[in-house]
Amino acid sequence: MSLSAPRATLRATSRAALLALIAAPLLPAVSFAQSRLDPVVVIGTREAQALSKSVADIVLIDSDTLRDSGAGSVQDVLRRYAGVQFTQNGGPGQTAGYLLRGTSTSGTIVMVDGVRVGSASLGQAAFESMSLSTIDHIEVLRGPASGLYGADAVGGVIQIFTKKGQGPLNVTAGVAVGEYNSRLGDIGISGAQAGFDYAASLSRETSDGMTAIRADSGSSSFNPDRDGFARTVGTVRLGFTPAEGHRVGVSATQGRLNAQYDSAVFGGPPNYIADPSGDFRNRLKTRELTADYRGTLSPIWTTTVQLGRGTDDSVSGLADAPRFKTTRDQITWQNALRIAPDQQVVLAYEHLKEKAEGVTVGALDRNTNSYIAGYSGQFGPAAVEASVRHDDNSAYGKNTSGTIGGSYALSSTLKLRALAGKSFRAPTFNDTSYPFYGVPTIKPETGRSIELGVNWQSGATSASATVYRNKLDNLIGYNPDPTGKECPSGYFGCAYNISKAKLQGATLTGAHRIGNLSVSATVDFLDAKDEKTGTRLIRRAAHQESVSADYDTGVWSVGASLTDVGKRPDSAGNLGAYALLDLRATWRFLPQWRLEAKVLNAADRDVQPVYTYQGLGRQAWVGVRYDMKGF
Figure 1 (tube, helix red, strand yellow):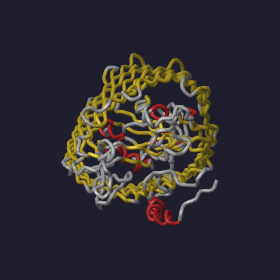
Figure 2 (cartoon, helix red, strand yellow; figure 1 turned 90 degrees about the horizontal axis):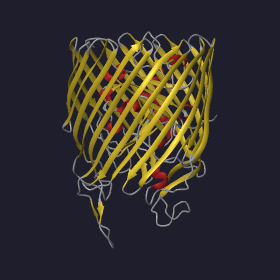
Figure 3 (cartoon, helix red, strand yellow; figure 1 turned 120 degrees about the horizontal axis):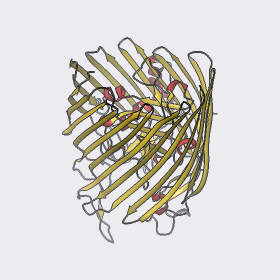
Figure 4 (spheres, one colour; figure 1 turned 60 degrees about the horizontal axis):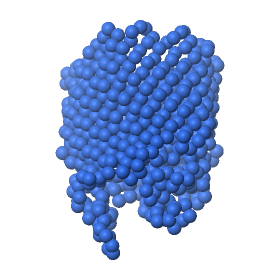
């Protein structure tokens, strides 16, 4: 497979790549807080699996990393540690899109505690409504995974796990203040006793922000007022274990976001004068509810039943703006069969009902029945993983997808990996039905992918390189030209199928620890093109890299992260490259208390995440955190 990178891209990334190579020979899936125990993930096979045995390209972002990263949002964490590219209509609290391995936002599945979340109309999850303080850990599978997770897992899967109670009673809390009149507070409680486990958390964040649209953009929607936000997130997770190997649980997560943004109301003919002075807001409420049972029925058979509902309820615009609500109801029955000590078969049935409601689209719904089979086996130095999934959807018909891969350990420290798969993405409700945008005849996109990787780990040093190619047919995109044959008469632009697209690239990641110093790095190269025209797909950077370093004495710690994002084409112009330097420090003045400080975008770089929009400048924070069990 040939991978190309422009000379300018190579020059722009050379410093970060050199730092990564010096800090650590490079790795794939790293638990960034190193542990003597091999961390366990579930995303690669849908069942618990040692991270080191995974054939897929998986990143585990554990609870210590989330707590100590100093990141300002879930997006920052995923960009820094998993190489996910993000677009955003302004600063914190504004709508964010995500591009994993160059796929569109709708080409990556996001799950919370096993339940798929996000708007079925937009085809994306609202990361802007999530809080880091309610999350225990995040697993990211990079690469197509429709064989396990079905439609839309073209670029990969991001699974978020909320906190679960264990051990004695523990209470955590934190408060912080920052520039732009920003405030953050959270509190949590967790524990387990007499067969019951419990965890609950509440987070509140507010900020005045800054105007989302650039003053020099020439946009008719520019309004010099501040576009701030308020976000409240709460989680509850309860469980009961009546007998060893059997647990019944329920969980609930709710996020509320009220974010100002810039837009305009247009007058009538002949001038259609824009009025941007109104108070435009995105009022979003997200909710995930689950009930589940997991039991070991015999030494070789474990079964899981889960019922889940995810809702995305949005009112965007002025006070009388229309409401859009989508609901996903999911039923999953999964069985893991241990057919040999190092071999497992997973058989599952899944039913998903999606419903969209809105003034302009009426009521839309579709149902999917899915059957999944997966296998993972270890044969001495070799490992094999395979999956196949059949989806029968009431709107776009039947589709069968799958993945097969293997690895071989050349030594105790070096492992080779290879993986191939077939994936697809279903059109969203907006793609098919939104007025003056959707096209009912639009087709699902399909993909065929292959990747090769090498992993190396020795003690506290780990490294890897992965190269991949994903060829897509009928890629769903936006056609801004209403005169083309793709758009119906009267449209100003529409959804349409790009005939073919090719996404190829390379990912290098690494981690190293020596004494009190730990360093990690991720470097991504991406070549994402429309094969018909040869043009780059919009908003994809040809390179993105991040390097983090932390020095921790136990009483105090200091750290820094540098994230560099290359130039990106957009529909109305090019977006400039930018580099973000984030600094952080903590002081543990008592075993249960620590003082925290951080400076985001310390160099005050100009960030243009989307054409005409701007991110925040330098922002300093200071706060205090309490943990009953100690740090």
